[in-house]
Amino acid sequence: MNWTELSILLLKAVAMIGVVMTLAGYSVVLERKVAAWVQGRPGPNRTAPPLLGNIPVVGRLLTRMGLFQLPADGLKFLFKEEPVPGHVKKFYYVLAPVMSFVPAIVIMTVMPFGQFIDSTGQVATLILTDLDIGILFILAVSSLGVYGIILAGWSANSKYPFLGGVRASAQMISYELAMGLSILPVFLWVGGTLSLTSVVEAQAGLQWWILPQWTIIYQPVSALIFLVALFAETNRLPFDMPESETDLVAGFNTEYGAFKFGLFFTGEYAHILLGSAVFVLLFLGGWTLPGLPVLAGVFGAVISVLIFLAKVLFMVFLFMWVRWTLPRFRYDQVMTLGWKRLLPLAVANLIFYTVIIAVIEQF
Amino acid sequence: MLNWLFIIFATMVIVPALLVATNRNPVNAAMNMIVSFVGLAAMFVLLETYLLAILQVLVYAGAIVVLFLFIIMLIDAEHAPRPKVLTYAASLVALAILSFGVIGLVNRSMEQGGFADISVDAPAASAYAFGVELFTRHILPFQIAGFMLLIAMIGVIVICRRELDATGTEETRS
Image 1 (tube, chains in turn orange, cyan):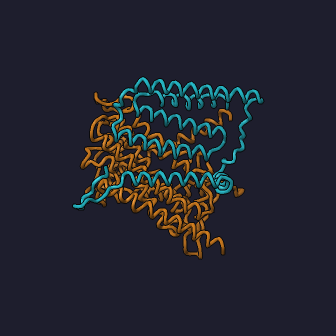
Image 2: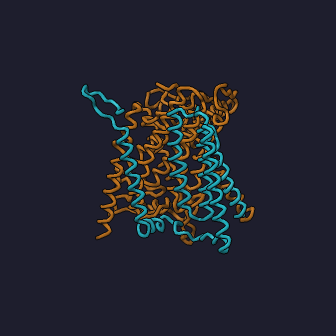
Image 3: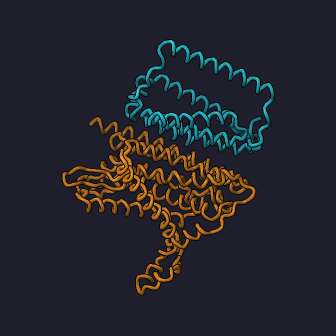
């Protein structure tokens, strides 16, 4: 590998991080806007930089949409004083935000987001590394994200963060099982490959000119279990036990401020984005639309990426919609749901589809 | 290149492993264990057995050490008492025996012409090959391992089962 290739790879990686992180940042604004919409109030609509906000129509529109809120918040996180409380365990206190943020970035390497077909008909997936066991890689790396939360809770050396950390570890372990079991039938269904690209390609067609081949139509239960587990794994309401602010102040990140808190915050939204992306790839047909083949050339590739992004953003919207609609579970209810409802359901679901697929293959 | 990577990752496995055994603070020990497991996964990648590498991270670093940390936090094991002199002595004896064993093993295989080259074409290279091997040639060990886990699980359930006393309230068995 020479230097040109290496720098091109690096450029691609940096571009990917740039796009996903910007999206994650704007998800925060979106969250506030959705919350405002659900609760019948305008949401952030004042922040405007001096010159840009004074452009006659456009500036006012952008201000009303709250688009300048993100730079303002981001800069605030960066330039605030960064106090470190005296009673924390320093090394782990600094390590924890990094550990909760890094897995999100690593997952991006195996996340396909579109398709490029050149003039000779050669198909290439738009992805940084096309691993043939991509989904296992995603599960493995995202399971490391919990250490950030546990360590944050433990290193803060005070009661509420500690409770948050303990809850996080129990919750993550419980829901990882159901999550892993719920996606097995999907891979059996598409023909026993673990590559995300082939899962998407298997969902491209249109059966009898009317029925999309999306997995969610054939396996609604798998999709439901995966979605619920995804909510739990990303610590979103109604499962945000680790930072339930009604009883734990702010949970595991109580003792954090400034940029370290910012890392937790953007890390959470990056996880939501990537989790939504995995859901779209597995259950909603990825970058394909039923019955419409991906067009050749750069234009078709851009369209496929836009379709994918639209689906992902819809899932992100769903995350926020649920958050501002449902109340929070009690901790014991979260555990009961995970172990006594979701896990048996996931096992039954797996056995059911194994039998069904075996029967289909016989005929 | 490969050699350098091997040295880096081997250090990443061995040094934290040593720290796991010697560190006084259980949380430090658990964190070192994660580093060691991730290093081991990297070694699997060097051997081109990607599936094993990912399973190593998924199962050990991602799930088992989380449980360790959970239990360390729950029982507040940070203030563990210093072990007795007898424990130190016993550990030293065990270490000596193990070292002699390893040296003997290395010597014997050197006499027989050195270590065999590790086959790069490992059967666990792909998930499919791994599954076929597991469910055909190694089905008996697989079943036995599963059975042992089942026994352990039943044991845990029996130990921490709660019984209802006469008044109908739950009471842990003593």
